[in-house]
Length: 422
View 1 (tube, rainbow, N blue to C red):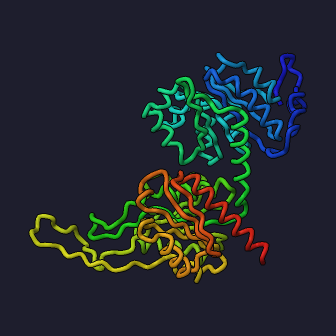
View 2 (tube, rainbow, N blue to C red):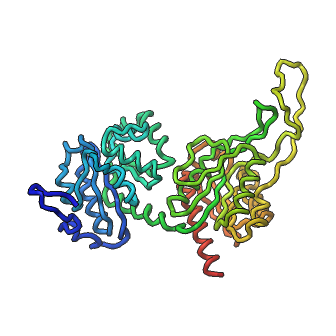
């Protein structure tokens, strides 16, 4: 409810612009989308995007930065959506109420300036504040960038994108005529519908994910470990959460921030990882268990309680013993859980054959075999998805977030099949 100039109450639910809602389809029916507009010359395209979203069933709530008013007016976006456009935040706490009730935040177009503010937690405009609240609440957010191409290639801009990529989906600009042009409204619509569809694919499912690299102590200072970054496991946990799942992430020594909106359990050693996984499986029923963590295969058989003196001229002999294979215990404790395991090796050293053998040993339902040399501490990986039926799907070098979505779709398909068979 907003107030007109003559102080008579006005019911914006009856605004004539809303007559178009659902006129093209109902893919977004019932969804409340905050559309944020920043000071780009492409801001006028936000009007077309707003109308497209509405025609496919969404309610759209516009928010503009003050500088964006140089390119489109507040009244234009209010008319286009049938909802009052927010420019300045007031005592009504629009940034809290809007985000709490929304299903998604879209920033279209997003300038390098706004990107920097969001990445660095600067809340000095309605848009950056809305984004901050959305990040804090774990709301799905999609950002479409627009700027001159040299600005897009700026390493600081790339860094800001990297900071936010674990939490926000980016739509890359079109590089044309020396500019990084914002994606067209029709393309944005497809991306938004895809994101909304993903938000329900695992709804009502409980998923346990492990990620990161465990460490094994030689002494209180020195450890044996591996180079896993945890990027893949955290991407899986975040995407599962965005697909509607209730996610628990057990992680060790990751090089990225853990995702918001999931239950977190931090561990350090392989023994702590083992205990945490076993405790979860014994105390809660999980529909799927995704074992992505790079758990140390060996640990020192004897660890020193004090730091070993490096000034000693004596050679140090390190005796290693194998650690417990956690994946071998999952089905014993939780036989009804869908088990997804990972095998990292070199493609040139029989990766797929080794993965199939390991899959049978631990009774896994899905095996993800990834080429370790192409994925360590990188944002992309080369992998094979191996089903219990023996089907093998080869994904070339692929972004880990996209790979996570593909794997989770396989998980959803497997869970649905099990439900239909039971």
